[in-house]
Length: 126
Image (cartoon, rainbow, N blue to C red; front, side, top):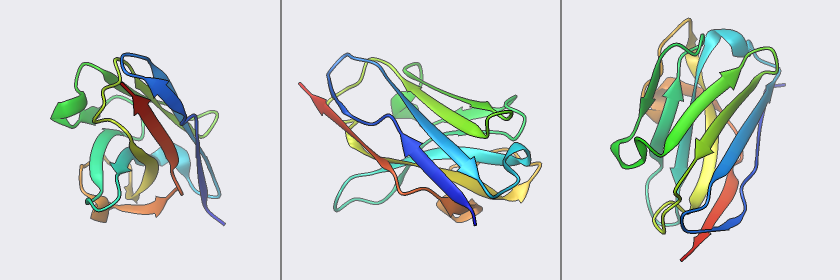
């Protein structure tokens, strides 16, 4: 059974930093691209960051470039999202996702991801 379990979300103040983790099990983690998406109630899911299976390629949505870093540890089957200088428009449920294709670079499209976690809530107070 495939599981993606996110953790690390919490209430922080604007300007603070936060690291989210996503632990994967039951899938061939090390050969799949991984991504983080976020969603707020009433809005569509938004791509945040993606990383290739080997960690050599990363992509980010424009609104987080320079503030957010995605990384992975294939030995631990875990992908991370380091978020710095959190802003009032960053709050959302952050979910990780594993790509359907293997040996692939990440994309920003939810349709390219087959496994999803339940998400972790990030709240930012101003």
